[in-house]
Image (cartoon, rainbow, N blue to C red; front, side):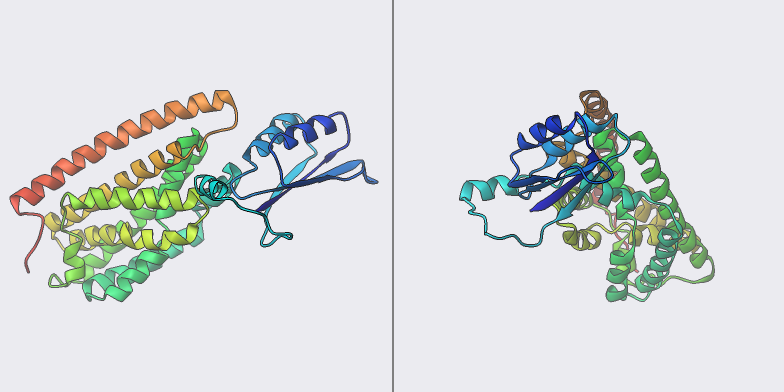
Length: 335
């Protein structure tokens, strides 16, 4: 369940607000009387998966009003208990989080700040030496703490909404994070000889047709976990389609002069990035992530088509290259 609270100035919009919100079928609602500041409070309670229609109506009615505030709060428990039918359970499983909740959560991953850069640098150090030492625990730890999946998912979400500003921020953050990981690992490779007998390191130079399939599935799972309000599942996705280990492998091996192996790791990184973007974009689109207004929806549809076409062409091209490596027997490396 979720609680929506709207504070707004008293006036002729009151009746239209209440009428529009009641059309969204809330479980309960309450409208307070005008207080000493001339403001009112409208409280609405919705089941999980409901409430988007009310939010859209409120924004449409209040968009010309400056002095109003809406907050969405999760409800941990409610009495008396709701009677849930099997049909209601099935319907709720198909719903997604509110667009505004998704935007607030996902946009955090597009922020480029000192914390993002420091976390990327530290996770790069962990993964570089973990790969070279064939230490799977260190590699998995670096996968989990690396923040690189955030801006990738933010870019796909912004593409589904046609939000060019958020797309730009997410792309800048993703490029900065990947560039930092590649650059730092390259510098380490200049002064530190990587252990070419390490299975963890060499596995990031193995590229086959399973790489696009895994990345597509993991990207879809990541977007679905966010869209349905289950972000905890992202930990597993971070491990399944880690971006930092192949980036660190490419930089480390390039710094050590192993350019062929570095190229294969870079190919794996490119496949992961492109596949995650494509899969996440499609999941957001088919789950019904849309802007509020008709004009914004038309722009968003164009953005989805263009981005999906670009990512699709890229994943096909990268898959052909990966298939060539697999067929020629050059995808692996025997120390």
